[in-house]
Length: 262
Image (cartoon, rainbow, N blue to C red; front, side, top):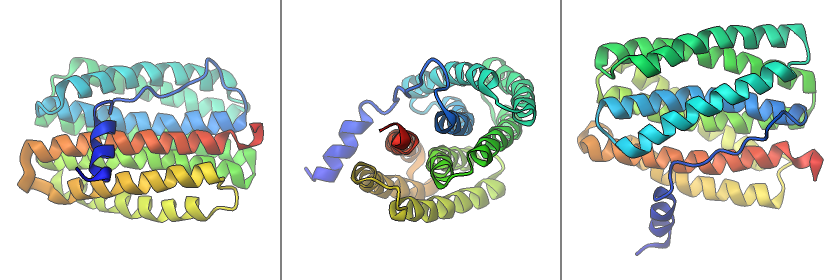
């Protein structure tokens, strides 16, 4: 068996990862990391919901949804408590209100094409505010490292966003929009990986993880390009590959966030 294929299968068996989170925000880079992770969780929950509606990867999608909802709740409380300025705290109060509506849809709306459209609209509001909070925290940092933590963290979100839109297309939910957004996310992901790879702050360990991410990207992109011809099998591969890529990029983000603590 090809070595890369073995790596893919090995990761796939534990594709629903346990995302690390400290009990409280330790410093500004940690805040940027967690704020950025909220963006990712908004997309991961929608991805899981779309999987459940199409009866794809049911155990894994159920675990991903439950895990992501719990982590979003916990990190939102941590970020609200940490928020160092009024404008940042206002953002998290707004996010809390939109999260309440999103969570209600995730919990009560039986997955269907009709409910998926409403869900995508609401996850967009949550994503926008989560991104706003992350950007505000990066601006407070005012350092190149803060920007890199934000960028690496955004790659986690893009991995889930691409999978979400693939699954939306498979279910024929807002197909034209989904195809355009998937293409945009793909281009942004590729460009940001190059920036992260070439950053002066990138340690040998970070570069090693980015090389692993490149390998996972090969599998993910191949699954994305299969599109409708591959049916549920293709959608299942997209789910697994997106979880694998997320796992690696979460580690990259954590490594960038910890540079000043080394």
